[in-house]
Image 1: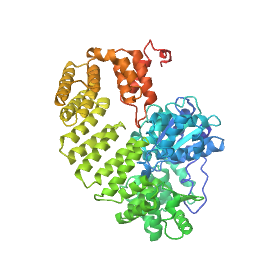
Image 2: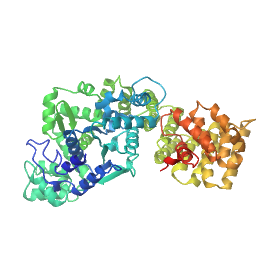
Image 3: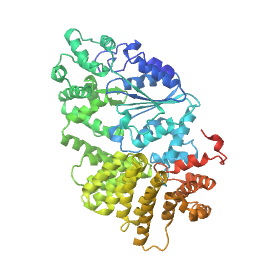
Length: 634
C-alpha cells in the first residue's frame, strides 16, 4: 500500500483526466495537483503497523474515490490483493450487504475457515444451514481470520467507498477487524463524506480530510483538460469551482453553454450545483433513456440480470448516448453512475409517480429476494399497507437472525409507519426500539421512544420504551437521569409487566453499584418489594436476588453461597451465566467470575453486541492478580 499511496499522489482522478468527455484523457503527473500533505499523512499511516486503518473525508468531488482508485490500481499491479466495496443507499438497510460485496471475490476462501467461523459468516450472508443467530464477535473473528490467511501470500488492501451508505453491521465488522490486524499486512481505507456517522471509527483510525485544491493546482488541472477554458470563462470556472476537482472539470466541460446557477453572484453549494447541472442534461434525453437511468438509480446493487429485464429499448445505443452525456461510466459489461451525485440528480428529476412505478417494477422482478422486494415496496407506498408492513416485519426477522440489529430496527420502524392497526403500530415501534438499543445509538432510541409516546398513551408500551432508553442512558449519559428513568419505568411496569419491572430494576442496580448512593439502594429495595407484593410471590426470583446483590454487595451473602451451584446448573444458559459472572465479580469471587464468564462467552449465540457488562467482567476478572492469565495484562 505504501508505494501505491506514493503513486496515487502523482495523478488526479479519472474524472479530472477527462473520462466522460469526447476526448482522450490527459496526463496529470505533477504531484502537487492532488493533496500532497494529506497523502504524506496517508503514507505515514500506511507504514505504521499500529495505524493501518485510514478514513478519507471531504465533500463530493474532492477526490476521495480518485485516491482509492489509484491505490487499488497500484496495489494490484504490484501483486497485492485488493478487496473493494461501495456503500449504497438501497443496501443500507440490508445487514452485511457491504461485507458480502467485499468478500464475494474470495468466497471460496470462506469454505476453508474453521467450522464455527465458517458457519457464522455463512449465516450472516443468509446462506448455509438455518439455525441460531450468528455471534457478531464470531463473524468479526471469521473476517479477521480470512484476511490474515489471504495476507500470508501478499499484502491485502480493503477499500470501502461511500462508507456513509454502508450497512451498520458491515461497518461494525470492519471496525472490529481494524482494531486487531496487528502485524498482518492488512490495510484498510474508507472514504466518506460523514465520518462522524460511522460506527466504530475511533482512535484506531487515522482521519485524513481532503481539502479543496489551491488556485495554482486548480489552474494546472484545467490546463491538462482536453479543452482548457480561457479568459473570462476560465476565471468564472476557477471562482465557482472552489477548488473542487469534479466541479472544475464539470464547469470547464460545458462552460459558456448556459448560465443557470453557475453565474449567479451567490452560487449554490458545490453538490447542489452539480446536481442541477446534471438535471439539466437529463432534461435533454429521450424519455426511455430517463426511465433507464431511474431504474438504474433505484436498483443500486440489485442483481444486474434483474435490472436488465426492466430496461426499455435497445441497451447498447442508450449506453453510448448516456456515456457521451457524462452521466455514466462503462467498463465492459459494468455500468455505473459517473458520480453518486448523478444518481441523486436522476432521483430528484423524476416525479413521484415515476419513482413509484420504478420501485413497483423492481419489486415484481425481485420475487426471489424478499428483503430487497420488501424495501422497494415500502419505498413505493405512502399510506397504510398491512401486506407491505408484514413483508418488512418478516425482513426484520431475517435481519435479526443474521445479526443485523440496525437493519431489523429500521425495517420494524418502517413497518410501524405502514401499519393500519394502532395496536400493531405500537407493537412494532416498541420492537424497533428494542432492536435499536443493541446498536448503542441513544439518539435513535430516544427518537423511537418519542414516536411511541406520540402514538399511544397506554402505560405498558410507554414504560417499555422508557426502559430501553434508560438502559442506554446508563451507559452513555448522566447516571442520575438514567437511574430516575429506570425507576420510573419499573414502577409503571410493576403490575402489568413484572418481568419488565425487574429488568428496569436490574439496570438501575448497576447504576447504583457505581454511584454507591444509599438513597438509590433504598429506592431499589422498596420497588422490588412492590413487584413481589403485586405478584404475591412467595420467593424472590433469581433476577431479584441478583439485582439486590449488585445494588448492595453486603446483601449478597446468600447468593455468594450458592454461586458455584448456580453456575453449574446454568451451564447451558449463557444469559444466566453472564449475570452470574457479574455477580461473582462484584462479590469478590474472582475464580467463579472467570469460570462463569468463560462458559458464557463460549455459549453466547445471540446476534448483537455482547451483553452489558460481560466484556467488563472479562477484562476485570482476568486481570486479577490471582488469575493465571494476569501475566498477559496490557
